[in-house]
Length: 364
Ligand code: SF4
Ligand code: FES
Image (cartoon, rainbow, N blue to C red):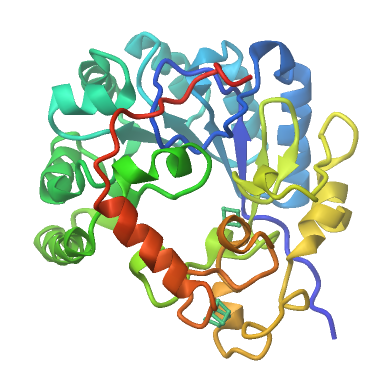
């Protein structure tokens, strides 16, 4: 018997790709969407309504920098009115910290603030904007003043992975309840910069020990979530909690994706909220059904006992290495490409590649 399809738990509303920062590992696509293509306020309000009706529990307003959308308080207010848990994912840069008050008053539940490191000059170098670290500090102070719940998003890579204990202390200093130590995920911009970002195996081992020590030190006070690079792992991560299982992403222009990198899979066609209701897209679209569940799997995933735990890993990483999104994620030791993935990690972690390819509109 086929189990009834559960609604998505979370919707990521990418309100804009505009952002003052140029992080070389940005999860936005290489071809950024321009302001003229962005959904208007009534359409986003309809998306919020449709998400709530579909059964979504949490909406994250993201980007780019979502604070650059003047209608953010209106969207947050509508989401709160519809009973959704509201989360703001912000760079903390490119707007006055006081602007957050209106968003908070609209009913914002939670903020995720990203940092590039604990030393200003190095963090500014990664973000591509001088003064960005100082701006983030000012926003952190405003978040504390407003009494908003805070998660610090610390993106780590070869250049700052040794700072994990210091990043955890920064989260404590800023009054965060949670810190997410997320290693760069290698899609899009991060693939372009893999030779500058990939840590060595020794660095990952040290990071794992640092995380254990920090978890023990802060137990009961701070939640530490961590994602380390799966290039050195034996098994893949259950990417997105399974394709079309828990998450739905809407891009600035309204395309609906099962994950942020799904547009790298060339044969998929993405529906748009301008043309089709969200519930219909979730349930019926060929794209959401393409890798849902386990029926699409081939060997070795098809008969593997872990298939409902990791769902064969990440479709976008499978595409990147195998040229086939239905292949086993090469992060799995059972994939015929596992050694290739490892060799790439070892090569790139030893690379002396020069300057970052910063995120930007130049390609469009
Ligand atoms: Fe996961 Fe497939 Fe590897 Fe099994 S064979 S562990 S299901 S990726
Ligand atoms: Fe697309 Fe993992 S990022 S499935």
